[in-house]
Length: 455
Image (tube, rainbow, N blue to C red; front, side, top):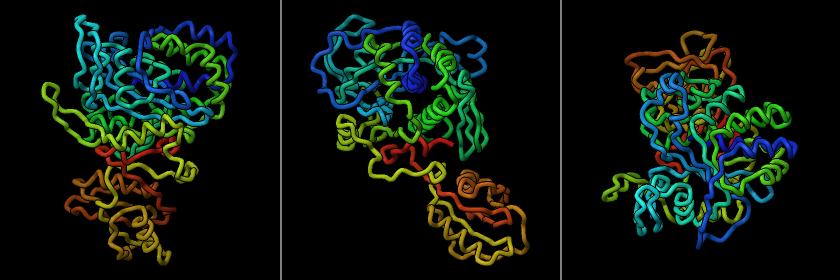
């Protein structure tokens, strides 16, 4: 999750900033010899692969922020988020692949950095690689699992994340349903919100807002990263050397990078990515074949679907877009993500206007985007000025998902109504918007462009 910030460093270099400015910023990055003495590495493909690692850096957060944003407890000096960011050879596309921290992994032989003992190959959860062998072992483990050669390593923490969001003036997110997590303190109503640094951290850390846990959280992280890219590329940061300097200075104090990722690399990437935008990015999670895969001495893990994972990482090596077979769509046409699968939501449509056939058209449009409509629209007893969705509070998540398809509609609780949701079309009705349900338990089903997950 903290790795979101690091990509902003890459993206924000796209202004063609002067060499002296970037050199001064480069000097502030802590360096790691992440590739020292590494052997038997995968063959290099096309493009550039960056391993983004988020670490628990709560020991650097002020006491007030620790209380406000519920960052209590001892820092674990561990990782719980990893992403491979592939930058295409022509520098016109970025592909972000999330690697779940609980992925079942085969760790290569190594010397434990804590005990000094040598260990042979053995099964672990993926995030254990950092605890036992730091960045080097993390890179080796990821390369062994993906057969993708990692070109650069970047590591960030809580502090750099919050500072980056604050300096950008906040990042806009949309949520079709309320999000409340008592562990992080996140409490968002359904709708659009501009999150500042601390609240943004709560948003990307939250993993108790639904039953999807880490997999659901990764989807929110991907959406936030796309929104962060959009804010950086549309707010003038990339064209203003002073704002660029301010943003990068805000994050570099907490960033660690491999020794080879320096000024020349930032400038080269920056010149090539001046037109970068959310629509030029795509996001996915490594395909999961088995949830709750039990391993003796380790516990529950996520086992990858190896055949699908091989195809995914083969595409990265070959520098192929994951969404190449889909036509590019305008931002307005992007379906809205919803929390409940539309085909499980029963809907009755009534016409509350004097427009003949309106209910029939709405019924057909809702059915076309997946809702289980009755296909028998009716006439409301009276004309109404606003479109209303009546729902039993026990089905509130379904109601919010339906409301995402009917922008501007009013949600009206009707205790005892049962699972059938009732839509009364009012004079203010404009259109039905397409929605998209991504099953958080099946993240491999979803590959989205950045402009499809932003507001």
